[in-house]
Image (cartoon, rainbow, N blue to C red; front, side, top):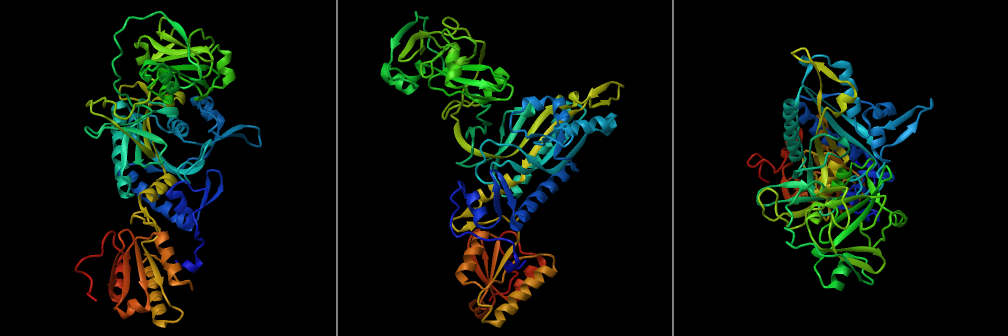
Length: 579
């Protein structure tokens, strides 16, 4: 491909809206352009990268026996009503009506479709197990798109589905995918950590996310460097400290002016934050007010809270009016005397005596508040976040917190969807049983962005060999004035094209500085520079983009390399003629 004909344009300045290196570089290098919030066009270079990622995934899915297919992106709403997710999923599910006034949705995922196909196609145990996958556009109406391709609204995902006779079969399929994902991310040049995660809207009994560590990642991971424990903080469980051994004391109100935060309160009363109870207020998608109580030195884990109260449609922060309507005062609130709210108490608070909590009056708190005495819990559960330095639940060593970006997920769904769609099979004993499913996803655009996050420098992108849109970037310097430069560069480009190993050829009439900057920005693994100086030195200057190592290689050897394919990694030692 001649760069003079390529549909792209580079940007000399960083886009002001770009928050992360991948966002900045993919825009600057002409790989993507934004159409709307969380909606991007892949320009030819970006599309080729996406194809390379897709092919790696396809090869590893085929390797474990998955069969590729394609399912629609537009679904009748009745399909999602049948599973219950039409009402359970919030506004991120795009709903619309077709011209016949029928309710439709834009698919976020395809469990319902697969379950329906199973009900139609599978009759006997002899047809199981089966693994299927496809690459398909998805749409999720994210409330806050960010990070370029990291969090978008429209994206292509590989989603695969395992269909087994029983839980034992599902276990085999699940760990096949776990191994395949490990290989995929290794091939893409990503160090991905598998962490335990919440099943979320997918449902089921077990889930893992594959995370790439990144300071800008929205997920917080709880990791133990001693034993390898790894979990998303959404589900991480850390042993909590012992509660003081004290007898409950009578409650008494105390004036605490200008202390709306736990830190303010602790300073004013000269006590530790561990001697306080903190109230947090949320409203569920179905309109319930939730009052969550945790010890002052902990934070509420919203995922655990959602699961504890089985919140339909998730939760949002409650408004001041909603809190006051239940008899509580924001900044000085507690469940004491509250009404019309579901009270959820963390298990540590439930056994911690004589805490300081809000008195539901501005400027006042109550000493010696005891759960079960001064108020009653509707639900008692672990609803707090693990903290840096907390003991590991497996080895008791200290855990660390790291931010990460999710690049893949795997779920044991069980029979949630097949039971809803009557997808059963006839067993060897003549009994009908529901098919057992698993679901497995990788977002292609997010994977591309994470590769850039891990493979860039201050000059631009440095693509790994498996992902690069072209293996090499051929740069001709001074071709308009030096016929020999143009002749050699044209011949090298033609040799690569004839061998089916197309390279990117910068044949533009631009200055050497512009060409070098663009080559480093675009990030092909090899930069091949033909110039009067390189030819005078005996050949072509060959540069490995990732390491900046350079060598001058005879033209004949470069011709052979292009015909055989530029290598992954270093040039083959001992096979090139010395200049």
